[in-house]
Image (cartoon, rainbow, N blue to C red; front, top):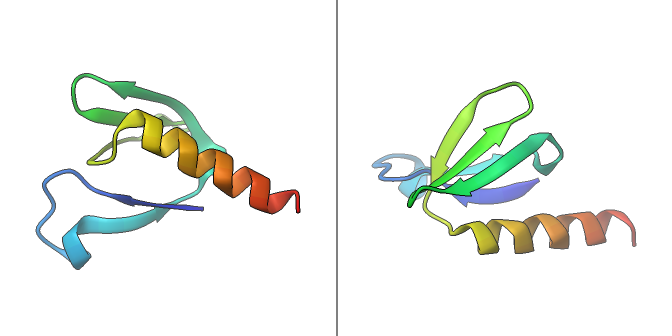
Length: 65
């Protein structure tokens, strides 16, 4: 699971939410960062694509320790 921030959110501590990194299908910068899940649902988030990739890699490393 990785913590992200919804784009332009006014609620829930600046829109923070936790996403299951295992169901991310694609991440695009268009220029906003759009995450598409395996079920087709999309999230627009404030974090840049490189930061999301770093968080996913950190999450996966933690699983294998």
